[in-house]
Image 1 (cartoon, rainbow, N blue to C red):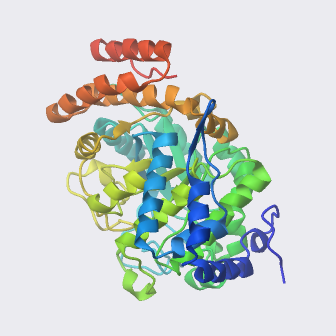
Image 2 (image 1 turned 45 degrees about the vertical axis):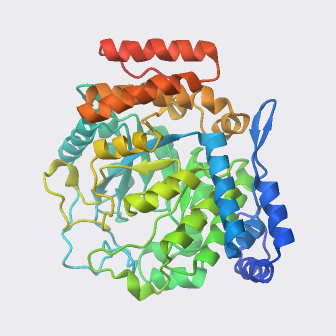
Image 3 (image 1 turned 180 degrees about the horizontal axis):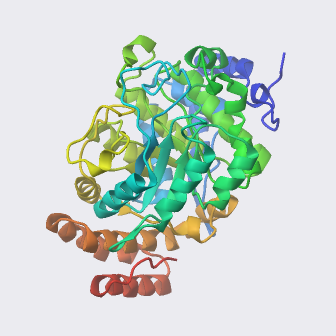
Length: 482
């Protein structure tokens, strides 16, 4: 039997089934051990020191005990600590992005995705470079600066050359004051050589959801196609980092398997990346299985109620305090509101999960990957964030300044992120307000900027940020950054 080893490069050793089972057994045994739980909670609290905030984080076993705990007062403390951690390292900034679906051609047989090869009644579509250009202009006209491109796995229709050409097209489009400044990529597991090509193309984060960490479940859910190879898929992040990609994004699709198993596996994957590469995941996403064409989520019988889902988010934030967390428009406004408070640092806005959906007036459904619960426009999402005292940020500065991987994490861990990300958020928000916002959003947005400038710690940074904001207001000068 393979033994658990977070430093191993072998999938079944760093995501070890027996270790997960023992972790779940340990968590169940100690879920009412309030002495232990209180010790774990105390360990997890952020500590302010002379050189910034510090957090111990938690092991997958410790975090699994918290997740198993059902005591209401301690769950309330978990949420409080998660909120403290979120504020300490990310403040009240929320980064905005949009997915851009390039193609839904796919040769895999994934049972939970409408793009599966046997689905003969979904409309198959692949964007040409001209169509990508039109989509990007539509996204720029909304105000987006950061995209996550998506494509099914199909070596004939969606080869790496198509992805690379599409990235080049996206970065080349300068429309009015619009630019896409960061392209994150969510495509199938590939080779080190292809990851090197993605790095050279200037991608931001490489994102790949594990879907499920249960190997047997994984192979049943992926009966055909290259994605059936769970080892190749699970070891993809190691190859991506070998290929020079500093920022990688993990995630599972909650609802496919038991959530406690997935939670432990997700944290073990984060621990593995830290142990082998010296830096954990740049982001962790928390998608939940949703209804889609040809897919009924009820058949998987692992759905989780909102309160459990929110607890999962809080526990992830406590366990991996420095990692960004992403929630998509799969979730409702209500769920996203709680999630933002206890851990989430990035959200999508005005999203369409169909191929070519942004150029159409009415939201198309014939090529959607999943139902969108939050169907508000980007302007409505920005205004809502401001009303909830979150700073909508369109910042992409760290990636373009080389603050990726361990360099970003060191900034985050020492608290210096407040002197970079906070002013960058305010400057990019100013761009959005001037170029795209409704009058109502402008009004409350500028009130927030005036207030939040005072929260920049360094006086010289605060002064320069204020000067740049005035330049943005009074000219076409854009893209200032620290």
